[in-house]
Length: 52
Figure 1 (cartoon, rainbow, N blue to C red):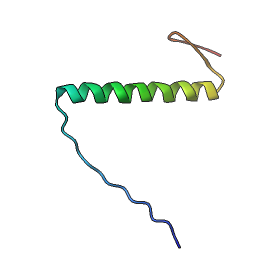
Figure 2 (tube, rainbow, N blue to C red):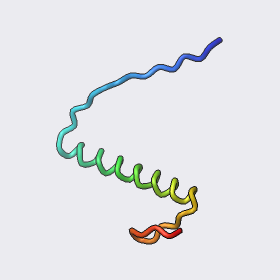
Figure 3 (cartoon, rainbow, N blue to C red):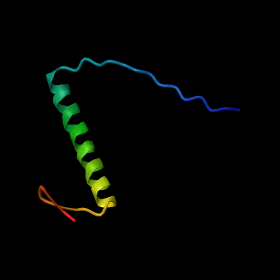
Figure 4 (cartoon, helix red, strand yellow):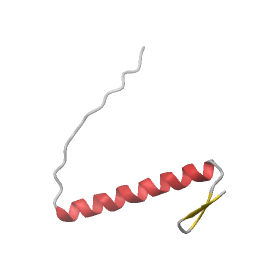
């Protein structure tokens, strides 16, 4: 039996307070992902500078 992947696209309309919380959450996730990717490539992160 074949596996079927499905996706649902939704649109949300957050108020100002919810928008701030969403931006904080997504921002943290994005930076953690970038940090992990750099570490896997052999870079060290010191403040805002990248050391090889």
